[in-house]
Length: 208
Image (cartoon, rainbow, N blue to C red):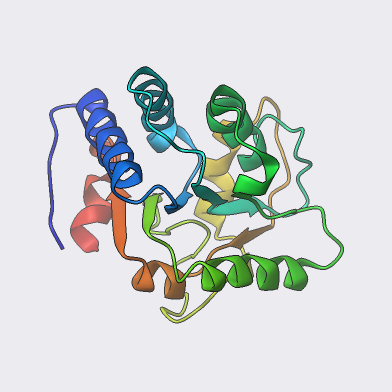
């Protein structure tokens, strides 16, 4: 594992966007998995700008959303689906066949996990993952104590995650479960960027 420190959020985001763009150039059929939220937000915006300005061919990439709040409609502005639609899918005009996200409103969440695992397996594993680390050390909704061999799964959210997660919503929202790509897929990914931004994450990074 290599640790890189940046002066600020802008430099961190620009570096990551450039790395993803280069990965797409190297492998046009890249299987890319990203987290949503504040930490990767600028990376997503800069990636779109780079792909369009440099006319990089991204027509063959497949995109995976890392996780989603269970029971949250896609139309909710705090949903991961809304984040990716506004930050990536619409600006890049990606075809629906190019992206896979969990349907957190599904009556069969186990089937949602099975479908996601099948997409990953059929593509030979994830080529590049961009994930953040939470205030309690979680990655995606893989809360502390999650098995390192876990594939896609539904999990009860930690109290810290429920509390911190309120920042994504305009009004108080009941958060109980998350559905997420598991640590087993992360460990087997060909390349992973684990991002942490700001002093508030310093303690959890030291512990990890």
